[in-house]
Image 1 (tube, rainbow, N blue to C red):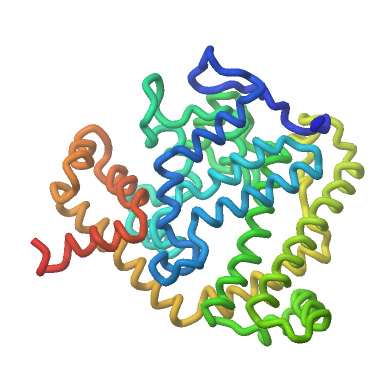
Image 2 (spheres, rainbow, N blue to C red):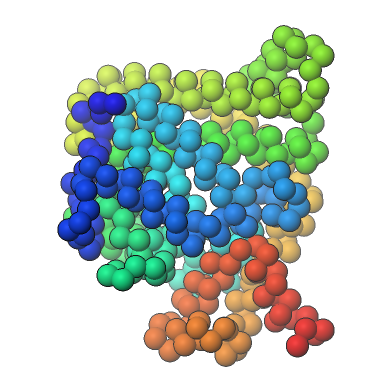
Length: 378
């Protein structure tokens, strides 16, 4: 497929922090994708919470399946806009690598525990993973991803506003401005994330019986999609109704995003990648109508699902587990596994503990918590 003039060229221009003479330039972002998919951090996403803790059921989304769904939506949108599919995909695959165990509850717990030590941010931690914590190559630390991929991971939610962070240091090493808007591929990945989680969290919430189809019918415009399926197939069972309605809703959101973004590209006279960087605002956007639909759905999920009392109980437990482990390791770093205890002598104690906890899966975190605090385990 021929790329649009405002797409990111397949060979890129920034190169890598550590140049690799053997690399085929035209495969640069495909190489990045391979490295992300084969990383330890990516594999661990299989056992990290999306909303429901992994052991609750086999059919609910995890961070891994979420990332895969985001990547496929990103590829679809990028293809239709004649953007670089490989770049959009690798940014989508890597966007959640920095999440700690237990999803946002785990992040909130780690933020609170580490508040006096610089805090915690999963986006910044993801950058740390791909530039240093992954350690499987002979000639460099991290994954040595290309500058365009790193910029997309760092800026997929918009320009960077804060200097003095690992993310800012990475961008500055490539002479990439902090305050410019990212590539269209990064913008696509960000909104593919919104489309994916709005729809699959709705699917999971219904499957787990936190909400009912009848309640979904009350959401303006979203409910109309469910009603249309029901009218077309009056004898359909609930499981198929939900699957078909969510497929249609996802498709409608993708179509709107593509068509509205095309209009913005024309209106802003976007002719090159430089035009994208200097556009002054995101180019990839929903129409006002579908931005409203997305926000209505997010509000509904927040009220009915993310703040359901059973989810609140999980959140409370998760925050306790993370905070208790941090406090214990900070008080007694010799309780850390030997590999990590040795790191404390070379780096800040709090930083090492944050890295250790953030890398845990849900089940490993529960196991480690029990090893620390269950008096029956010696």
